[in-house]
Length: 447
Ligand code: S3P
Image (cartoon, rainbow, N blue to C red; front, side):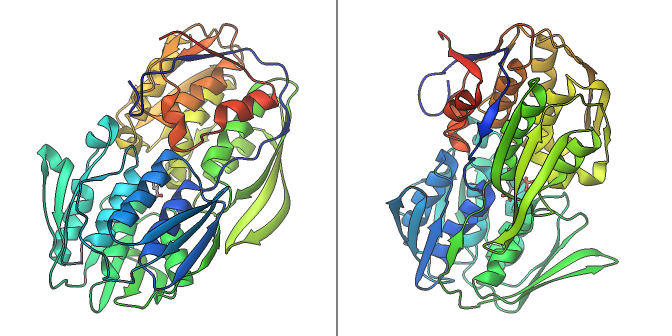
């Protein structure tokens, strides 16, 4: 079962060459942050290009529950009238963040230093994910929480009445943990400092500065030291959300999987904390041109022109993991068709995503005749040009697992089936029609 109705099995079979333009949706990370920062600002925030996937819609509903006005004008245009830093009202009901780890974790941070109580839940995937990594630093501000074993959802968070500023070194590379601490720091007096060893996506820092906060990042012997001055007045902004590099990964890789393809994927965010997949693809020998490079809404953006060509397996440096953490599933699918092994190490964070993504990719690839090796923090895919296919993959409520196997099927000798396409709604609602327009051959199957 998906969280939003019965399971929707689908299959993907060998595709004719993919041709055309692929307009992928707005960036999920920036979309969540636009709604949350809009809600924490005074005045109006106008957003264009918002991802209207279920994850982001759930964050919009949550912001309304905390007292902000959130209105859809249509076609990705939204207006938020915020309550200001410290202005969140206590929600009268439970906050259901659906499948969204980013939504729930950032919202917990945003409310943790206000004198209000809120209870959070989500779908079966989100209820299984660790929340202690968020509630531990939030306790340092003076917030309290009661959750299920391991701090899992449903969880009630009691915001600090007299918050203290915090200095916190993140124990794992996580933009969600960093962002939760920074958002909590907004309503604490003095300076809140987050230190990270490896650079994770920096949208929160860029956007906080854009909304008027005083925030600096210094590279020191301790790591990246991010300092936020508490209790700023944030003012509403106009935000153009760039298209999501993590969603672009699917049509880009599909064009590299299907012989004879040429696809243009316009307007894709090229923030260096997000573009590790493209670096890896080029190392594999991919023909990707970055055209029309420009700045949009403070983020670097380019049009990607991708042409099919033979690829070789590579070893991905572990230090690159934070900048492509969501892209390992689709890279693993592509690696199955490359020549030689693709070695992905230092990826244990993949085990605590929407599902255990190392396990889901390993089992799905094996079911389709691909040889893999797997360990606690690594996955090696032995590429062999031809993929047998013919297997069914369990998607475990994980949109990126579902889309990765739909792409693999486009190059496999026999159809690849997924047990549920429903989760794709969370981040890329148009994925199926968009890929079919390019030439993909998908079929709805009986449950
Ligand atoms: C995200 C951070 C990453 C990423 C997720 C989105 C964000 O998670 O996997 O899809 O928007 O901050 P972690 O912070 O757990 O690495």
